[in-house]
Length: 211
Image (cartoon, rainbow, N blue to C red; front, side, top):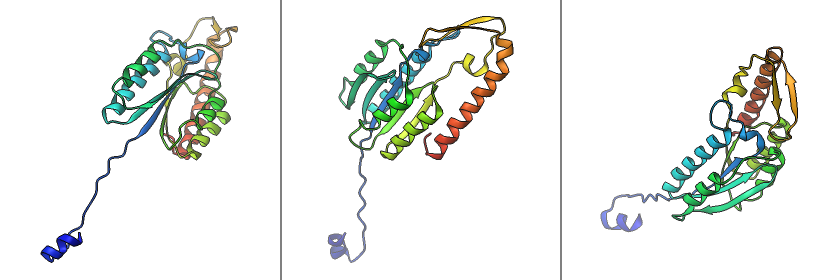
């Protein structure tokens, strides 16, 4: 500060603290697989609850928050805003939506990478089920667009532990197909495939600095 130096013959350094407003997008998977509930609430309900809490926290610190609800395509889009009514709009959009339809995480997230006009925080809420190569390609595209990316994987305990013991008929929530299986014979193969999928997805995300 040369003016103060001229008056006091002592050096003073001026420091500026700049407030920066973050632009955040909540990207919520609302495809059929998110309707799975097991013995509790559905994965979509958990994802929606997390989304509204994050939106509240972000808006409290005056950051702009937007929303994308999607299955194989974007079904609801709310532009980022810091206005007082934004939280209610987000909550109503999430509450009024019912999960369903096929999913295409990779292509949909690839498309969304182009939507934010500037560098943003992109928070993905999904079970993450899809071809790893497509998901990784989408995450890479989001990072290439210089977005900060946070992936919150929402899973039901049954998907992690596969506790089924008796013969059962499994029905696909996205295509309606049914498959009669002996869960005890299938369990080890399922858990092995699930753990391999998780490890591969986490390793790729870590390399791209996706939390």
